[in-house]
Image 1 (cartoon, helix red, strand yellow):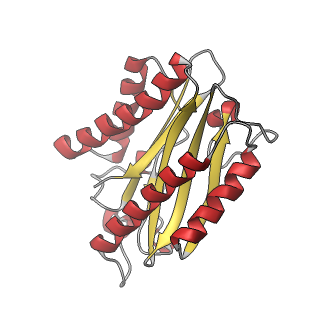
Image 2: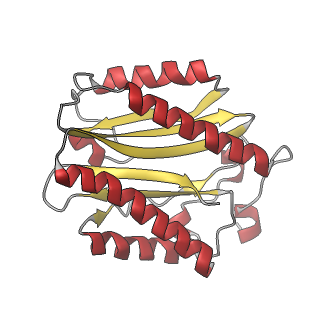
Image 3: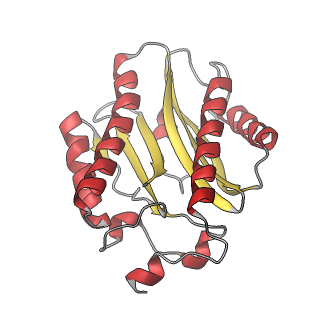
Length: 219
């Protein structure tokens, strides 16, 4: 598949609609995070997330709603959670949403902390910082997706974390983007276009059993 084909869009694609999907998905992430409290099981948090999406008027979910708690923050999108952990009063969790709004795919995720564990707080903050630095590197250099994730690994190491190299971003578009499926961003040898690729960053603590996740549209 050529570079052009990998960045193709459908007839109903609209940059404004993509931005609307982005804004609405971030609104949902924050509302869901605000609703998750210590004492909730992961399954309960996922159910609460789906209820909030319904209230916000989503069209549909295009990838499963994911809330990961504690050690499950180390697991990738395709891995099942271990058991059904309860969120503690000094704990870490992330929210990962893939939702269709106005026939376009929103995809956003962020990490949150309960309590005052300094390493968990730093992990949640650093994953967003690393994401933003990598996105700025893309804006300033126009580098390939492959080079982008090489840079991400170096930045994670600088901050003292391990980058999960199995998480390398992906395409989005007007729904369903699978028609224009292009492989992982981290394997894309050309410069990714704005408004079509999601930059995913997942990091892990070098010794403790938790990590953090952040993703947003490259724009």
